[in-house]
Image 1 (tube, rainbow, N blue to C red):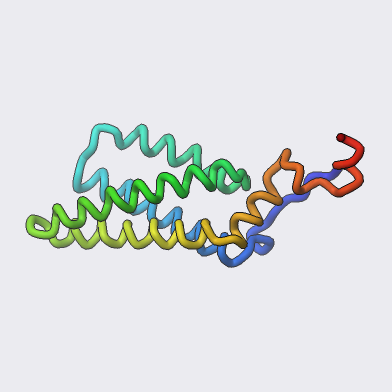
Image 2 (cartoon, rainbow, N blue to C red):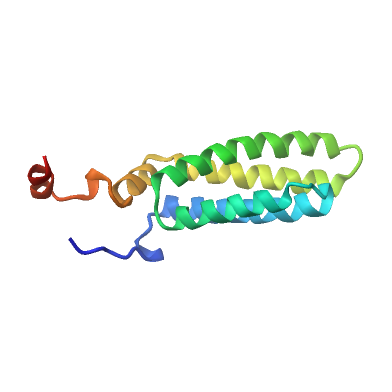
Length: 139
């Protein structure tokens, strides 16, 4: 069986929008987290998101699910900081609100049935991407 390379044009629109929101939200999160919070775990987050980004681009369904989990947690985190910064720092509050919207948009597009189906079909090693004859032969 030949390995098919998936290009950007092969991605459904929901996946394209989801990845756009995902990477925009994560990059902005890392920048704002470093500038405003100066957190000690910046490097760990950077490494984890980098590894996860690699596997999302390589079309792994488990990475999509993990990214959705991170986005839900990130949306709650950013909304909380947005409300906390509201009285002290309007710009910080506004930036955290933008990040929450980007992560929420990414979650919306990546959880859609079209995206889920695309990731499940194209994940290497899944039985859904094998032709029927190969499924019967391997059984």
